[in-house]
Image (cartoon, rainbow, N blue to C red; front, side, top):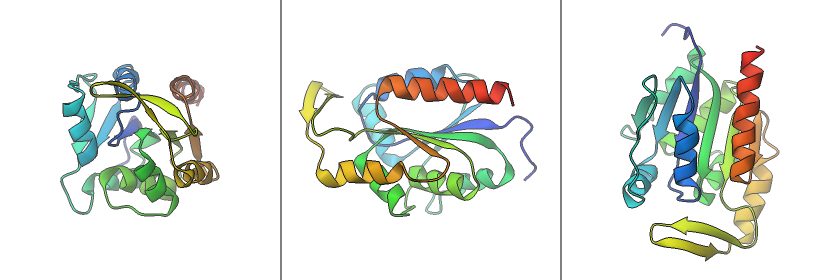
Length: 182
């Protein structure tokens, strides 16, 4: 596989509904983006009745192979940035402990191994949160282990953990500016 002419955004969707619709809006504003849709994310798309209407340059990879075959593109300079948003506590825990057993956790691992900067929008970041469920807003109370894993992920090299939608927007915009000034 030859090196990509224009490196792309990689964006992994996990099974979280926390700011799911808003994350899709950010994706729609990007050019040259590849969307990695885990099996759980595909369920959330249906539960939240969302359409994956994306820019014409977007490509969608679904979690259909045991070895997460699409991750190989990270070896060849295809991606300049990986965004994992929104990221469930399950995804964060797997990333922290090096478990790569689905498309989202595999692309995170490969991004790290290939020194591709990552932005992770962790969902469980405070002892009490309001989040949108398919039938409306609900309160959730992340466990201590969930909060601890989010903190552990912040120590990973080339990984920026964001905790709010505004922080996600800012991180993506900052990365766009960095890339523009190359």
